[in-house]
Structures are given as structure tokens and as C-alpha cells.
Image (cartoon, rainbow, N blue to C red):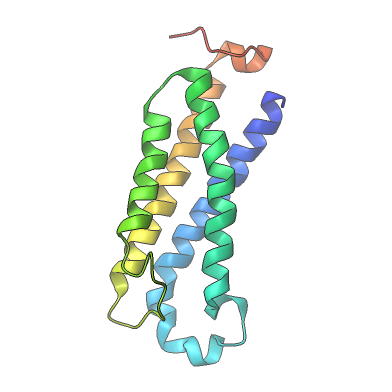
Amino acid sequence: MKSITWRAFDRMGMTLSMACAIHCLAMPVLIPLLPLLAGSFLGGETTEAVILTVTLLIAAPTLFRGYLKHRKFRVPAIFLLGLLFLALRPGAFHHDHVHEGEVWHFVFAALAGFSLAIGHWINLRLCKSCPSCKDGQSHCHSD
């Protein structure tokens, strides 16, 4: 793939990760409105699963490609931090209906989204300052 395509994936991943984080931060406020949102996509458990799956399917290859390209460990480390936040959230492995008292589920999910967005942002910054990204070379030579 050309670098411009990878940059587009990074931008899309950063946008989706931020949308995920904002969605997670908004949910504790929206939980009292769930009866009103029950028929919308915002209130469904499927929404969280779809956003999470698409976000991770974009983040994994782009952030690890960023590491392979630039050899900066902070890019995959931030991805792994995001995965850790996802794993630590209450109900991560047995998705029950989230109740009002389980704000930590949304806090950890939002931290995961912000971590992934920051990883994409760092990846984009590294590519912007890397001459080999512009030339389409396989490795960055500007250490």
C-alpha cells in the first residue's frame, strides 16, 4: 500500500478512536435516557461492539506498521495501553447490561479510545517528519 493510503487509515483510525472515546464519555450522561434511546443505534449494545471492532481492525495494522516503519516503540506501546484499558473495564469479558453505577466501564473504554487516537496521531506526526514516508521506502532512515 502507498503511504498516502496508510495516512488515510491513520486519520480514519484517529477519528474513529476519538468518536469511540466521546461516545463512552457521553454514555454515563445518556444512561438515564436509555428508555428514549432504546430504538436508536446509540442505545444498543451492538453499537459498542461495532465501533470497537472497526477501531481495532484499523488500529492494529496501522500502528504496528508505524512501528515497523519508524522503529519507535511508543506507537505499539500506546496501542497495547489501549488494549489494557479495554481489558480492565468492568464487564469486558462478560458483557452484561451496564447500569448507572458502572461508570468505570465507560471511563476505561474512553481511555482506550483516547490512547488509540494518540497512537494514530503520533504515527501521523512521525510520517510527516520522515523523508522515507514521502519516498515510499520500507524503513525510516531519519533517526
